[in-house]
Image 1 (cartoon, rainbow, N blue to C red):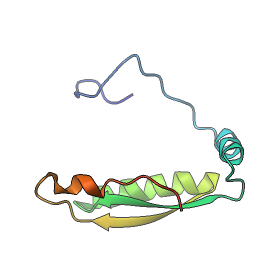
Image 2 (cartoon, helix red, strand yellow):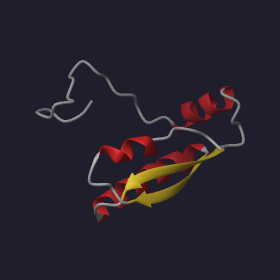
Image 3 (cartoon, one colour):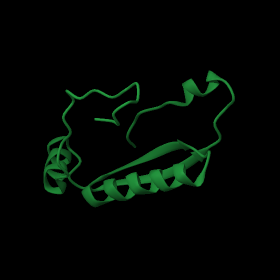
Length: 89
């Protein structure tokens, strides 16, 4: 996944097809048959970041994951690291 020529590119990584039903089945198996709510923090650097976050939000909504978008300003230093948080409500 990724674009050829960028440092994180790895041609041996294979992606998965977009499969709404499989995603819903996996959520049900994980105990979230009625959906789940979560918050997605993203850097509000440009409109592109907001657009990307909105696309992610829409893809997840289709499978039952309701995402609240939270635009945050990117600090000038690595002080942002503690802001990285993973969790479900």
